[in-house]
Length: 123
Image (cartoon, rainbow, N blue to C red; front, side, top):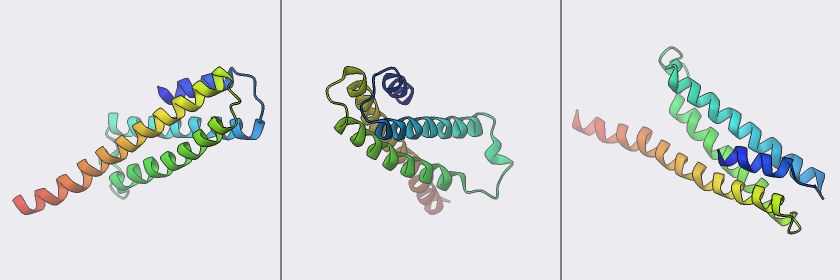
């Protein structure tokens, strides 16, 4: 939700630097689409049918790359905001989404790697 709020805040504000905010919008929408893609995969249990893909690794890499790009986009958006409230709000929600993505990376790592490694020794 924070990605969507950040996108809407930037989209409805007067821009001063088109390239910086276009980059921010593209990164937020691509990240949002990929998050929804992984949710659909989990909801419909598509990962059980496509066993050739390492889904925990794919999700981890998606969150890692998306978080790095989102952090860069939020820094650029914050530096170019010129104290316009909509742009500052967009950058703030971008930073909030970055923090939430880092938490998702940690939880994904914790569930897939730590749980699997401890279950090997208990079996």
